[in-house]
Image 1 (cartoon, rainbow, N blue to C red):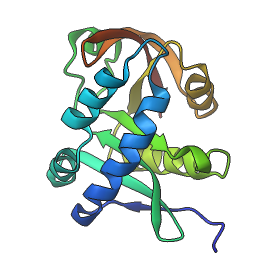
Image 2: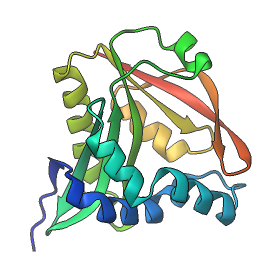
Image 3: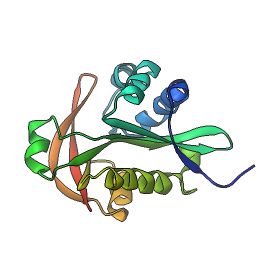
Length: 178
């Protein structure tokens, strides 16, 4: 058994395993008031294997995977495009800019360096791709994630809303500038 987590670009054949990791990890980052039904609806619409195949085929998106002992234990999704949400576009004026849309690691892998390695790789990919900054949204109640992002140079730039199923949640918009 290896202790080293490898960060690699995901490929189309990874879509099913990425979706399985997403189905486990997404609910863990949801605010306490979100319902299992709303979480399941979001997972089906946004984090299915078919959606991951779409993300992997899109030239404006990059999916990185964290691999340990041959299994995917986490992933990050970067969108290399300006924010579509007008609220976020007003906050994030740097161009070109990338969004760290998703970054999750299986709960049994917290503390082993997988999250930090994924974050370093995502930031390196954005910087190498010519982006001047990376932004992300994080639920205002997810203090653990906010601390993690802060350790990697992200600061709060403002707020936005985020819909999970039928519920509207409040996120911080965080920004990392190069």
